[in-house]
Image (tube, rainbow, N blue to C red; front, side, top):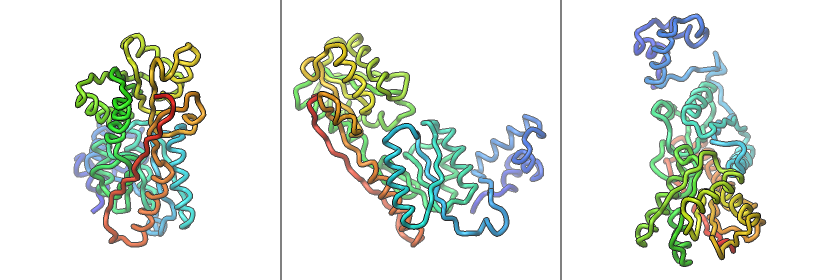
Length: 329
């Protein structure tokens, strides 16, 4: 049963009128009371219904989709897959961007659910406690995408730890023994952390060290260039770098060319995602190809199936990945 305004008032030990004032005119409420009510809202998982009267019971043709970035081509392709499939069935997307911030994600979930979408697509399986409560209490279809694991509803993605193992095995089989993994803000981009875990398992099993360099900016070409310099300074004997994504790897590869560093003769470079740029740099980038558009399309198909049959079972779909070996390793 959905939490009500009365439930919030009871938890905060204030009147329902006070809760309403916090929601509608927060500046008119004392700060300490406002904090108490906001805490109660998070605790009980209350979602304000933004649709009044008959509209609240109307059948929505909008599906909310929340992604961590709108500047990353990875998620643009996922959105294309979602949009193309949903539009075929008469639905439109309400889009939100978290910027890899779990608190912002929770705010978006609360806002979007208040508009009573037909379904919700959300990136990843890791959410704040408050967000978890909102998702579990909501009665509509939910699909968590991009990774595999224990999901609240539907799940479409790939095994990131296994992707990390796959690339690490490739590098070890090629004879590389001094390998550094480079990520960017790995706590925020935690799926890169899952790939590092798989990478580390393979190297440790081979009796090798698995140093990690975590850059302070999210993956961009410039960050990859700086990472190459730092690796060569901190780990001068490095023979291969496993980057958390293709943007970082491509930036490092281009920087190596400018600096006269021969790839892979002096140092090998590998990435993740299978972005188009990796096929156009020289040497061609070795990477893991993730089927991004297929993730969006399959998630949309699963949501449509649930909307058409509410008794359809929850399911998890592994879209897999492909090792694409270029000349950079």
